[in-house]
Image 1 (tube, helix red, strand yellow):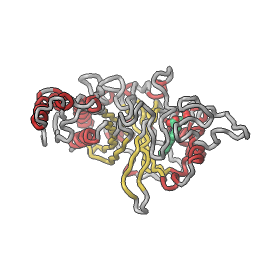
Image 2 (tube, rainbow, N blue to C red):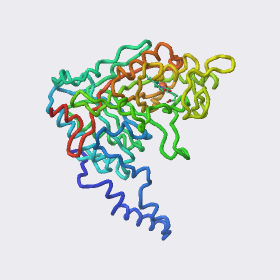
Image 3 (cartoon, rainbow, N blue to C red):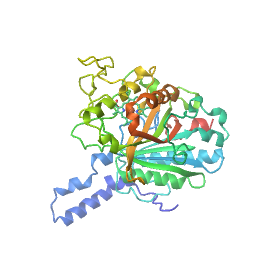
Image 4 (tube, protein in one colour):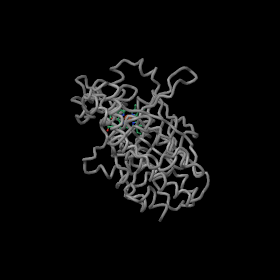
Length: 404
Ligand SMILES: C=CC1=C(C)c2cc3[nH]c(cc4nc(cc5[nH]c(cc1n2)c(C)c5CCC(=O)O)C(CCC(=O)O)=C4C)c(C)c3C=C
Ligand SMILES: [Fe+2]
């Protein structure tokens, strides 16, 4: 096992003997300034936050977005179902350890040593191609049918799709990278990396109160997501079957590049009419504050719709799409420069839903035709994955499919 440090608990070092050692060393260096010791002996709250891996639903859907994300897809190197079963057991065991702040069982490389779990979540998904590859075509849920082509799609297939999908979120970049690297090495011989992307969101504590995040266009983004405390939330986000998938979800991934030079040339009032919300605080142009319900019928005194006919929030709204809804949980990305000198930056759009045919598909069909935001966007990569339900303690993600 390369780089294995089995028996060495990251958490024990942080909270116990190692912490005392660090504190003692600090006191020594500071020549008896004992006041520094308690602060040095405990990791900051951000590092200590731990999200359980096991549960009814996989972690990484309902939790607040972390500061960092690693997204990856893997392809199986063969069609051996038992090898996939072993891999999902190994990955689930590793994810559970890492989310508790412990070292990986094998292929530990110490990249995240010294850090707490930092709200790490690891979420696994299965692509449509997986079911053919392992001879379980009959078990493929109908909702996993390929997404249709949308007008103006410019998809790079090498950075799309894949048999297995992994979303790793953490409030620390090293913790997120560490998890991905370990999972990749543990997969050797069974699955190889097809594509990988890194993203980011606001760091907890960066604002003086909890606020909705912003995207790279500067908009408050995430306001009108379905709320977990509403009666129909679960029906919108989690599937009730078939069989093994009950309690799971479907995630649509789109890498959407933003044409930021064009966007930033637009005056703020026109940017606001493109979205239908104020840029400063996210309030709808129909009035009120960020949390005020949108009034799509509201007219200005001149009789013109307060929220224009082609505004993003009007075209995307459930009311415009037969009730279609999804839980958006996207991250920004920035990947250097393109050959033409423009920034390669945008949104790693992620949306969880009970059924893409009643969520993403109808909404994106309308957006592609009539959304004034779309002239500032390029959809460059795409994926649809079934996200199995969460694993019970001692179980593994995908068990209902692979042991069934
Ligand atoms: C197909 C679904 C959607 C894609 C693709 C999409 C891309 C996209 N959106 C923004 C920025 C904002 N979107 C907002 C609201 C919003 N967007 C969607 C769907 C897609 N967006 C929905 C269903 C909604 C909610 C509509 C409603 O019911 O009011 C907003 C407003 C704030 C909010 O509610 O989150 C912003 C801002 C970008 C930049 C983008 C592609 C890069
Ligand atoms: Fe949107």
